[in-house]
Image (tube, rainbow, N blue to C red; front, side):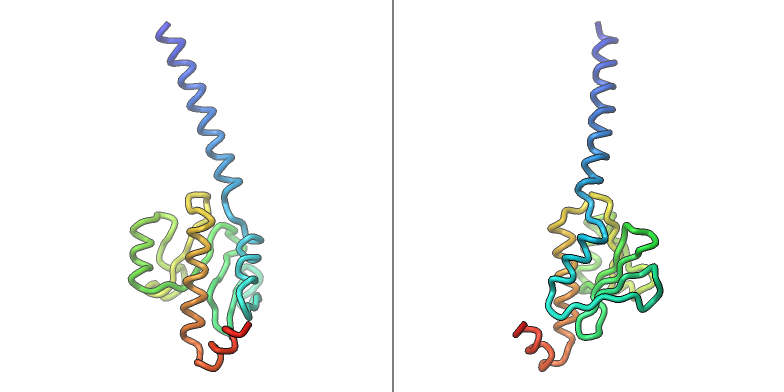
Length: 145
């Protein structure tokens, strides 16, 4: 009797593991969703200035997000230095910026562990940091959009 319960438990556990993997796939943002979210921001432009494997989003000519198309599961965002460290400590999916100034940039891996809201918050923060660094006149123009 004890053996059959163990067998059932193992089967149920395997089923939940498979469902968890499938659910993570469905909950993971992809490049199209990130692109759509970025393009909703005022005066955002996209391009491939570094080659076909890196999709770049800019506001007023300044980069706020780089998406790795060749890897397909990570992007870089600008971040306040203190918050950057805090996010890295809280989430293994957030690492120092790959090929970027590691004080001001984070690389975010999108594997389903972070929620859409968490990802949106990081993108919003990056966009706001860039806008804040722009001349006041440009900031005012963006506020009018």
